[in-house]
Length: 362
Ligand SMILES: [Zn+2]
Ligand SMILES: [Zn+2]
Image 1 (cartoon, rainbow, N blue to C red):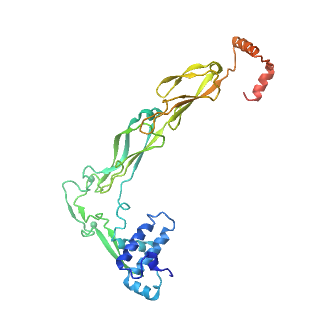
Image 2: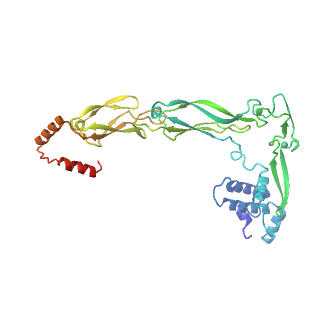
Image 3: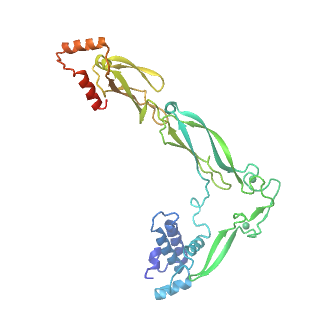
């Protein structure tokens, strides 16, 4: 191994054991593959662990200083040896908070809402399943009225120290006692409701206030309303909001859009339209000479911004409907109008017209 172990750990050749340990801790935290997402982090982590394994051992360090190498450096147990080394450098608690704090899981609930709810906000009842502290034992796992005794597995130590001999020398690892979870004591009688788990799964109902102006896909987070395992922080309740499609209005940010059909006579002559809004109806002037595709806007008939406030507008896009059939009276009037406009029309013969329509798929 040609690598310079001092260089790898970023310490000088006369670094004290404490400095070497401190440097390793810092780098190991940074490059631990569980924390560092980089694909090379495992290789780097192995390299710094190897450097530490040599330099932390006085005998190996002397040998390395003298000969520039220490036989063959291998971790016979692979990553588990490195992990032990890592744990021993930290005295069993490599990360502390926040990496090892056993936080409860988040619970996700979807909430389906109408477009109208965006306007005013909404109140909803949500019911969901979560892990909660056992109410019978208050999360202690001990049957009420009974006591605790010293854990027979770890004899009250709460942890195991294990010394393993490897090619790198003796390595000590510290493990939490699985029988008492590190507490050193176990119940005389485990709780009859949660079987000593301290937690139960239960249904919970909550009334949720949803503020106006939300969008499809928004999330509301209720801190601490998710899973609550004993001795840890609770996860969150995450409400995923979905807004149902409205039959008439489509949404573009704060604005609402809809297509408004009008007759050709309304387009030509102008009119006052009565149009639906999210809350009722509104009157909107249609100017004479309006064209297909023209847009009319109704201010303040759109949606509010998040949390409420100024509303956007309602935008109508005009679609002009032309009659397919005319009554005889209309036919006469329109022919008169055409003549008055100086149009010399040559309507196709009936048979020809219908054949043309068919060929166009009309
Ligand atoms: Zn219980
Ligand atoms: Zn124990």
